[in-house]
View 1 (tube, rainbow, N blue to C red):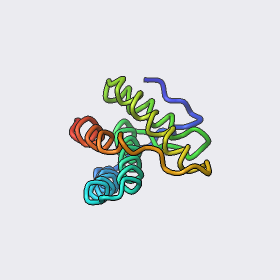
View 2 (view 1 turned 60 degrees about the horizontal axis):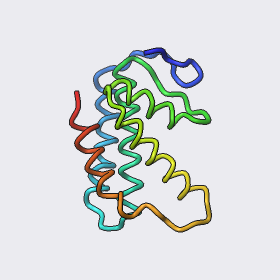
View 3 (view 1 turned 90 degrees about the vertical axis):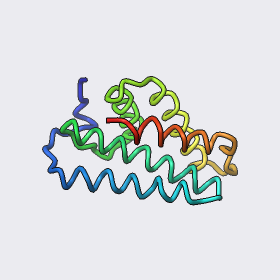
View 4 (view 1 turned 60 degrees about the vertical axis):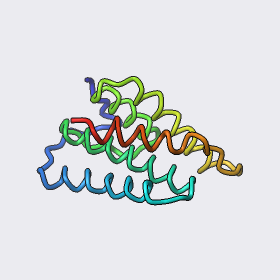
Length: 129
């Protein structure tokens, strides 16, 4: 995989640092699983997904730079690391839904997909490697 220097910086992480990244993602997943509110489930599922991406990227020896488009790059990198086009397709769908909810004046529109997103993130991202 080629790492774009605009979004990623080479860095060595200790096992303790890696564990902190993973635990932060796990905490968000627990919140998503324990809520009945669909919007809360979605947002914490998305955050858990992105944080697991950061974790896997750190395991590869890179730190993510916060810059315009970095969530998209995290999703692309995670898709390559896990060798899963589904991660790219579903992750990008989640990212677009999150952006629409976050930046527009519309009401929350992702309702039917929420549980599917949660199951996908839990089974395809957390249970890998």
